[in-house]
Amino acid sequence: MIHAAIRALPVLASEPSRSEEPSTVLEEVERWLRTRSWSVSDRPLHTLLAAKRATGSTISVVLPALNEEETVGDIVAAIRRDLVVRAPLVDEVVVVDSGSTDRTAERAAAAGARVVHRDEILPRIPAVPGKGEVLWRSLLVTRGDLICFVDADLREFSSDFVTGIVGPLLTDPDLHLVKAMYDRPLTVPGGDAGGTTAAGQGGRVTELMARPLLNMHWPQLAGFVQPLGGEYAARRSLLEQLPFPVGYGVELGMLVDALHLVGLDALAQVDVGVRRHRHQDGQALGRMAAAIYRTAQLRLARGHLIRPALTQFERGEDGFEPRTYSVDTEERPPMNEIAEYATRKVA
Image 1 (cartoon, rainbow, N blue to C red):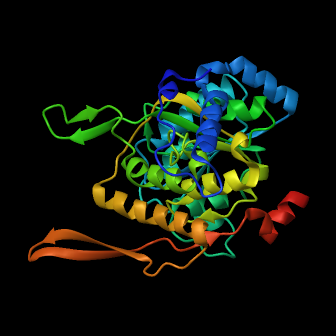
Image 2: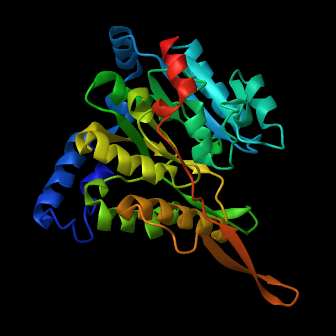
Image 3: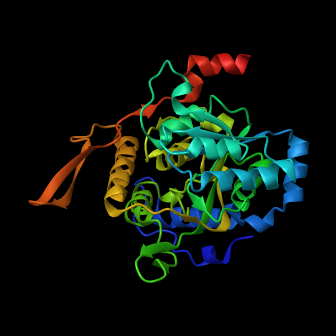
C-alpha cells in the first residue's frame, strides 16, 4: 500500500542522465513509488516475527551518539521494551559513542544498550570525527544480518521506526536497503510557549541541496522522500561492500552507491509517521550541505576538490568575522577490505 502523501509526489523536476530519456526515468520512478513505498501498518509485528523465525535473520539496532543524554535513554528503553522484551524481534541494541562529554554513555547503558566507544573499535586506524565514521565502525561490533540505524536525538520516539524499516527486509529477500520517510516539523524558537512549529518545514538541507543533486544527477533516486534521513536498515552483505564517507555525506553516498551496486528495485522506503528531533542552526546546516556536495562530487567524477573548505561569517565586535571549516575529505573503504573484519567473519 502506498501512503497517500506519495501519490501526489512530483517525481522528477530536472533533466535525466544523458543515457536515459525523460519519460523512461519518470516511468521507472513512478513504478518504484507504487511498488517500493509502504506504510509501517502494512507489516504488523506478528508478520515480522514469523518472517524472522522463518529466515533465521538476526537484527542489530545501532544508535550513533554524540552528546545526546536527553534523548538516547528513552530511545533505547523503547526499543528494548517493545522489540526485545515484549516481542523478540531485535537481537542487540548498540550505542556507539562518538566522544560524548555528557552522560550519553551512562544513560544509554542504564536503559539497556551495549555501549561501545568509537575509539575502542579498530584502534589500528585512528578515528576521525563524523557520523559516517561511527556507522562504519559499528559493523565490527555488531552481529546482526540486518543493521538498523537510528539517530540518537529523536524525541517522542516510537519503535515503529525500527519495525517499519526492517519489515521489508525480513519479508522480501530481494530488498537490500530501506529508508524511513516521515513528516519533519520545524520548531522555531520564540514566543511564550517556547516556539512555534511549522509542519513539513524540517529537512532544509534535503530540500536545498540533496534533492536537487539527486534529481539532476541520479534521477532514479528522486522518489525518496527523506534521502538524508538517519533511520534506515540494510543487509550486512550490502553495507560491508560500501565505502563510508566519514561525515554527513554518509547517507547520500550510501544511497547512490547502493543504487549502482544492487539497483533501484533493491531499495525501498516506509512511512513511519512524524520525526521530531533537535534542529541545527543555519551555519551548521551549511557545513552539512558542503559535506554532502563533496560526497556527490566525488561520485560524479571522482575528481579533486579545488578548495576542501567552507568559509562562513559571524558578527563579532568589529563586524563580520570569517570562520573557515574543513569539509570532510575522507572515506573509509568497504568493511570487507579490512583484515580484522575478515578475520571476525571466519571466526
